[in-house]
Amino acid sequence: MERDHIDTESLAGGFDLQSTVESGQSYLWDREDEQMYESERAYGGDAWYWTTIRDDGEQHVLRVRQRDGHIEWESSVDAGSHVRRLLRLDDDLDEIRATAPDRPVVQDAYDEYWGLRLVRDPPFPTLISFICSAQMRVARIHGMQRALRQQFGEAVTFDGSTYHAYPTPERLAAASESELRELGLGYRAPYVQRSAQMVADGEASLGDARELAYEDAREHLTQFVGVGQKVADCILLFSLDFLEAVPLDTWIRTTIEEYFPEADRGNYDDTSRAIREALGGEYAGYAQTYVFHYLRSGNGEPE
DNA sequence: TAGATACCTTATAG
DNA sequence: ACTATAAGGTATC
Image 1 (cartoon, chains in turn yellow, cyan, brown):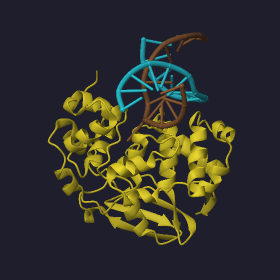
Image 2: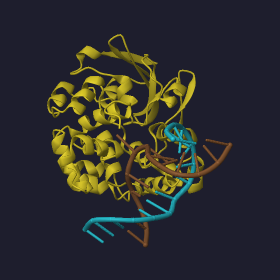
Image 3: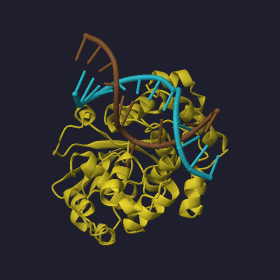
Image 4: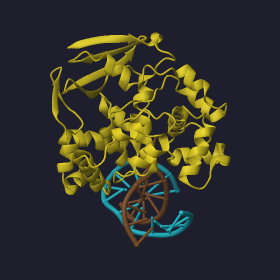
């Protein structure tokens, strides 16, 4: 067992682990007391969260918690650099916030959840989890990813318990549609199977998007089955370092209606350009994620 | 090319 | 209890 900690004060802009992993941007972290997580009950503790990482070709469990001004981690390997990468601890939140527009909904969201960072999740699990996200509630999307891991993921033993890594493209490509439907994926089941097959066969590459300009990268990702522009934006933002991506979901569309009506251009491409500019450009996706979490948590103006 | 509709399943509202 | 509606949309026509 290896363990270490990172001082929160050493980071530019602080850190809020719970907001970061429970804000609906990542479905790859589980709280150890997962029952409370599933009910999304208010929680202000210092619980451990776990995920799996691939290090030197093997899967390992990584556990993280925030306590007493520290980010503590435990793993079977030296995982400090993984923690920094996955939780974007090198992002300068002060610099990022400075680019955000001086609008109440944006500034209030930043105030309320200050320390929330974007995640840098691995591309394939991000692809699958956001294919699953269509017309789904956050808690159920998370439950579906847990079910996929449990059913198809490699077992990993750590600290006396058995965990499951996220399934490989090959394993999900080999799953049948009915197996996936049994996990509650509904009409997303064939999308998951076919997109996993595209990755496994090398028919399309997630990594290739990195080499493209933002809008071309988004277009590139829509070749996966079950991936439209919104899901493509989620993959770019939460996995591929395109921090300007603003997924136009139901929450941000409501925000546009109420607070940025001039940005509604009637179609995804043009509305996307307008809201990205309105949200500060380079880091527009950061502002989007804060606002999404803020509104979804019941803040903002009720109807 | 823009617009309408079907789609799995479940939680929540009324 | 029972039905309608909506949930981080996409594919198809």
